[in-house]
Image (cartoon, rainbow, N blue to C red; front, top):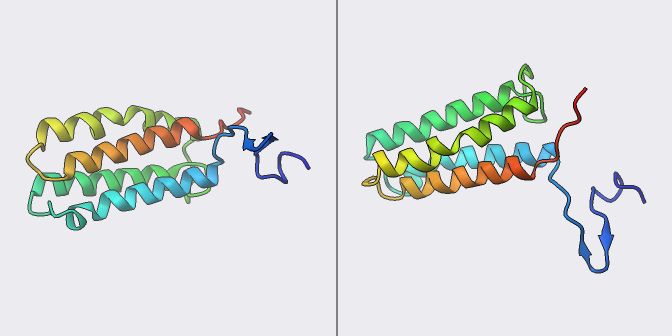
Length: 134
């Protein structure tokens, strides 16, 4: 069977060889992480901290805007190339990993939520199968 039929995993011995994740999986992870960030103020009990709640909602809005505008499976408008989308995901750690600890350290679980979301975004972008350039 070819690579397409096996879902992209070539087997050697008993362990599958490493294969980056496809764009459809990347899109699903993007939406799941953003949904987690959106509900986290109420799920983890820091909604009374207005600044942290606003930052979580803004991260969701900007993240979903990026997803909707990207030319990939979760994109609706498809006006941004995937290369730019991945660049933005690699560029987001200062916002998701540093700012919450410096500005919202007293906001309960918020810094941890944003740290997990930031690490998930970088891992998702790092593990995504590169798009062939035209």
